[in-house]
Length: 95
Image 1 (cartoon, one colour):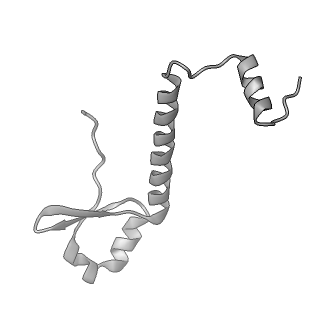
Image 2 (image 1 turned 90 degrees about the horizontal axis):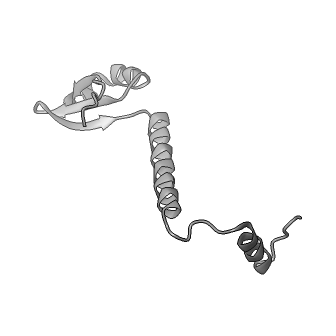
């Protein structure tokens, strides 16, 4: 994968003690990388961004399932078969 991941502001984990205001202000703009002894320790994201990321992952999962079903041999049925199945489960089929 040759995609460049955008850099994010970095703070030492210990800075949460005395730089909370700055960290939360920065969090409104972008995620924040926390380090511990110079190594990545965690990423803090705004709840709105977190929710969007989860929704995107769920949509991706749905797309993968749908694609898999389309590749199955029996993924498609004729209109007549679909109407017969709808009638079987008592769903009204308009003509």
